[in-house]
Image (cartoon, rainbow, N blue to C red; front, side):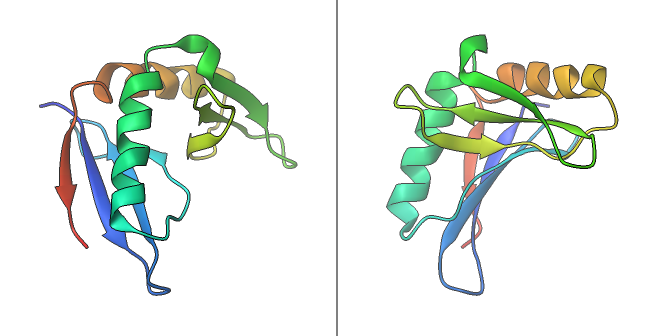
Length: 110
């Protein structure tokens, strides 16, 4: 089973998307977008940038948990991961985004 993007509408009226792996686990979350069209552009940007390792910024939260952000060519963050228990788990998350994003379908739940 391949990955999929799900676009949803928040209570504040803004749109966001999640990338889910084939097992249904959320592996990437977007920022909030003003319009559905902007969220769809964000999905396209993730698909275009996911395979490029240099687009992933690996970081550590203030409580020591590793996570990553995926950036577009212009440096804008287009997706963020969950907080992981280890650097190895974070690298597995990055590998999952690289594998699932390029061919993922998009479902509009908004």
